[in-house]
Image (cartoon, rainbow, N blue to C red; front, side, top):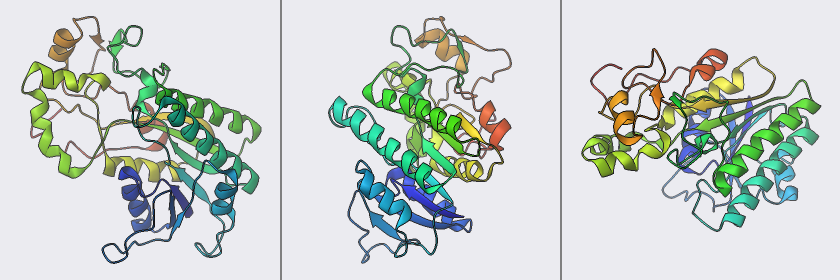
Length: 297
């Protein structure tokens, strides 16, 4: 496939773009930052700088590809966004994320690109999960929960609704939103043991029920999503199979959520509290066994 990766110079975007390239796909990356420093980095794929908040630039990147790709794109992986709340003003976060996503979806419609993966977020689940009205009665939580609590999570939630509208227009469209958990790179596993050392450390990770996603597993989820034989708009939680904690789930919930959140029957003591059952079932998603924990789940 010929694939455009937006936000492809970001933390997760670089890893996804390389993974798609390594699996035989023809990748082009776009982002707002300057081009790679060729003295220190030799990318495996072309790069074009563009601001996707501008529809003209967006449709040019997706269509005028003679200098960056040999043929029109078969698929788009849309990661470009302000990646978290609090990095700039709320209005800028919302406007940037909403307009760039709308422009990508609309450009794909006009150009008849019918295979789209876009980054939603675990924040749609109601993060931080200790706020009044966002704490679920039981875990793991699944994709049915829609509780955006910030301009960032609201932009991601509305992107999901927008995807549904585009899918209603076109029954041949596949448009999949991935609610990525907190992205972790291989180097960061060295910090995991510190999360369990004291109450403050544990609570610092409670905002998403101690979830995470290894960037390599996120990349594999994207690859599986692009090749999955499904149609329509779907949303998937993408997380790893375990928490980032040494403390069992039952103890975490009792101590840090005052026993108000129960563990659903059959859930393991170190199993993720962000359900990935739908991604496993529909995409064949299979994250690698925990890379940092010696004990089994």
